[in-house]
Length: 325
Image (cartoon, rainbow, N blue to C red):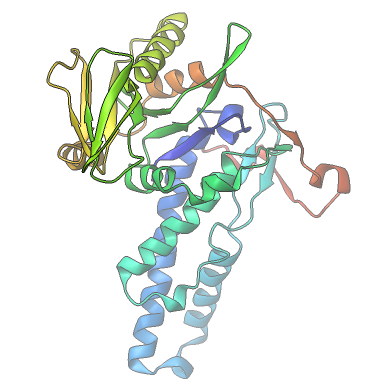
């Protein structure tokens, strides 16, 4: 699952420490999937064998421990301004109905759906602050698709707002893989539409007998590429930048496409996605530095979290307990 490190102008956990959270998320996600899968398989075996009452006490205790982990697994967030304190997060699995999963694939879907919600929280809050998410993002099929289909080692910035030259600029979609950055813009308003590419300010669009036009998408994707080049150069980062126009539900006819522009329409997107998903490389330092160079210019709108004003029952652990990170 790709990690959503920036959404719009919302405050993000990753902004506080981009070198800490990505590896932590990937590791804990793996641990929790193994726990939930093991628990589900144990329950399935019990149901098949009708052996509920004959478990040994030690095994019962172990089951209770697993269930407790699934109900109240703590994610400890480190705030940049208070490195000695960590917050225990609510369980990412608190709403999963494990017993209702008929098979392993269904369990995986439930797991990923809950991870999506949890990542949305991380992309809109820190230990001390939070941003209010536009509800449309929870229903955004494109956002959910990218997060759930791309690997853990991919860092996603979705419609990020950057503060450049004292003016905010909203970009489309940036995906930072371990080896390169992808600038993506989408043409997906209508199913089976055909877009005729050109160097003009507008492209022709055809859908059956209907005709129209759309703003040339290369304008947006080229702007994103220029922004990234500038930010990477500031930090003297050698990190390749790719750009693509994505049309998963239609076709793009652009034989004269400029060099370096990928056209990922319904004929090519699946191949691109498979290539991304098969990338074996883990998170890399240069990738994290590239992410930081962008996050440093992110615009943030947030408020102080009410928990800090109400003296609620948040628990804190000493940072030394997590020194292995």
